[in-house]
Image 1: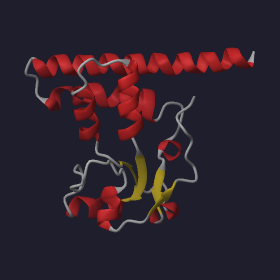
Image 2: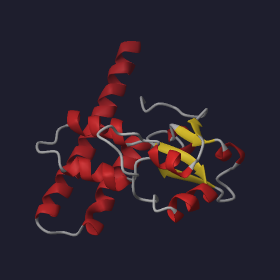
Image 3: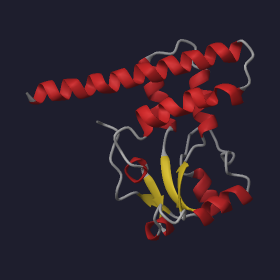
Image 4: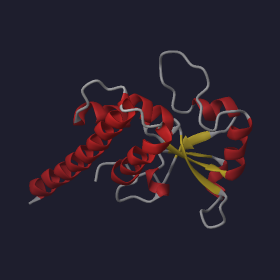
Length: 167
């Protein structure tokens, strides 16, 4: 019985990745046809968020990191922000430049680029004020998902409520 459950969970993840793969292929196709990014970005953003990023988890559980200051905030008063550590446009660019997209290479990009962090509204405003709301600081070849927070002086720690994406 336990093996059946584990197999079912893997199939569940595989099916979700297949749906995201179809969204990637769609966005690649309409991009090549000349559709502006603003028209198709949501067609990729939504499947990634609902089928991968937060699947069966709350935002608090889906965020791998949090700022120290965010531990004192709650969602109810709008003081807490769920932030993509690497802005979504970078994830989108990486997915759309895959030459022959398949479940394996889509999963690889998601595992590297899709990282969330809980920050305060003030910290979000700080990122915006220094030009890092949707940009990464200049970096070398290696990807540092926490580079924006480091550049802004925001202290980030592993989120104690994080639940890995394995269900």
